[in-house]
Structures are given as C-alpha cells and as structure tokens.
Image (tube, rainbow, N blue to C red; front, side, top):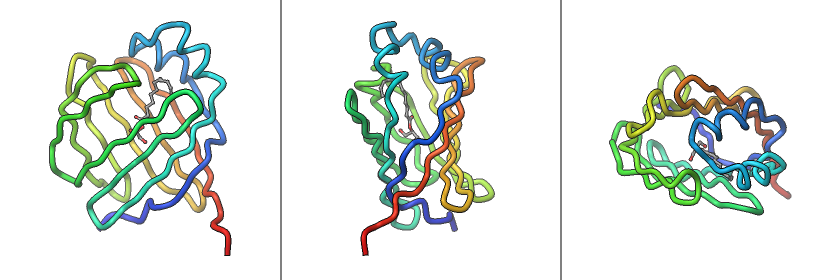
Amino acid sequence: APPNFSGTWNMVSNENFERYMQSLDIDIFTRNLAKFVKPQKVIEQDGDNFVIRTLSNIRNYRVQFTLGREFDEDLKGLDNRKCKSVVTCDNGRLVCVQKGEKKNRGWIHWLDGDHLHLELRCEDQVCRQVYRRVQEAC
Ligand code: VLZ
C-alpha cells in the first residue's frame, strides 16, 4: 500500500526549474513569472486514488488518477500538451510516466518526515523541489 501523501505542502526549494521549463518550451514571459512563484501542493488521497492540486498566484493545475491506471492528461495551463500518463507506487515513491511528444517525461514524489520531495523530469533536465507540510490548525 502507498504511504499517505494527503495534506497541504508549501514549497521550500526549487532547483533547475528554469531549464525544466525550457525543456517544455514554456515561453520566456511565463518562465520569468514562474521562477518567482512558490506553489503549494494540496494532495487528497483515498487509498490508491489521488487528486494533486498545484496552486500559485499565476496558474493552478489539478491532476486526478488511480495508481496503475493509465489516463489522458491534459496539461492545460502548463505546457498545454497532452500525455498518456500512469502513476505507480514503487517502494513508497509515486512514479509518474508521461508519454507524449517529449521524451523521458515524468515525475516522482516521496515523503521524508514532514517534507515532500518532487523530481520533475523532461528530456535531459531534472528539476528538484522540496515542500514542507503546513500544520493544520487545532
Ligand atoms: O506536478 O507536474 O505534483 O501535476 C510548470 C510549468 C510545471 C510552468 C509544473 C508553468 C508541473 C507555470 C507540476 C506555472 C506554475 C507537476 C505534478 C506532481 C502533479
């Protein structure tokens, strides 16, 4: 069974995002806005079913999937491509493969204490992001 990724997570670091965006052909205007953005991830998980929201002042993105089931992903608002995507769980890591126009595209999430890690990959670029859990009010 996968670990529980549910929660709200705020970005604390973002490495090589510029070159990752370049590999997706994101225009320079959007890149120059996006590089200042510290998105929040809101993850809802019920067993193998996930909704991941990436929230920011400039763009929001939502993806919904069930582990092991390929789905049509429409990356509207990001690079506007479409992919055949599938997410599996491998040793506690969520591994997404995004089949489409871009080679070697996908991402990996894993947990480390109250940190959520994300590696975003496209062609020869890897972007490494770390998020910290936002404490719920009691
Ligand atoms: O997150 O794939 O949590 O969807 C950024 C492109 C790509 C630039 C971000 C657009 C991809 C500008 C986020 C504005 C934000 C992503 C997955 C894993 C779930």
